[in-house]
Length: 340
Image: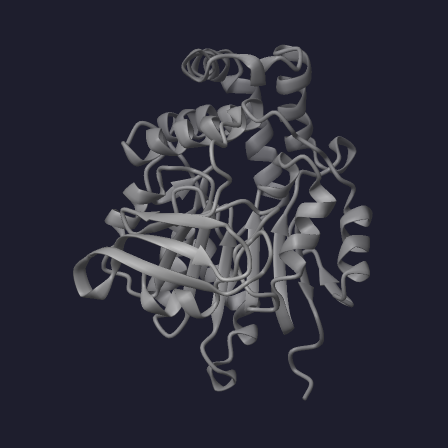
């Protein structure tokens, strides 16, 4: 945990100021172990392996455990390679984000902060930090695997990883010129409320980038994955043991390889994403399908929202300018960043 991070933290329960008691220092003045105490309420939180943990004590949600299982597999090299996540090229995605949202990160307004809410194994966040060393990047996720990611990216002094909940964010309001959350909010108990919590973190003239599961009639590729969850697995996959479900994802990917390959090929010919590879080997495509299938089937919640509905959320929460650069991606601006 780096010293700069303390400047933007606040208690997720009462928004009170926090103090840190250092128990063990790491390399370069990092806080390897310690306790974070709130001055406004009795809450306290732990720092372990350089990662602050703001999750509620004893939280044992199956979805949280499932994502931790998924990300640990990934970090152990038993899923897609670090260069790709769900088929997307991680570095190219970070570059696209900075091209699309870079105007919000103006250094003349002070230290620019970026929040990646639901960062998973932190590849996207790490590339944002590496490409923009003048920006402080925070990756937040519930997974205990963040300690492995922190160790992997220890050279990035402007990257901060935190265990936390998007419904109880441990930051001061209006801190971030750029907040992004890709494929996360629809897995919470209340997508709209999670969206609102993120919106509260966006500073004046800041931007909020989200990717939220679309309605099946709005996207044929995701409609096929919804059939996998709702019909092939009868909506029961989230109750299965994670190891068994991962094995079943392998079997399903084998059985559905040709139909999904054809659908993906047609879809990517129509939608030319700059962060998708121009081609994948059969083995690479298969690995991506297994990883994506587990992500599709494992969570307890999977809400699907019409584009019109999500755009309305942006407008209601103070983002008058909203664009959809690609299907299910939404980019909202609190105010035209070019004005003033």
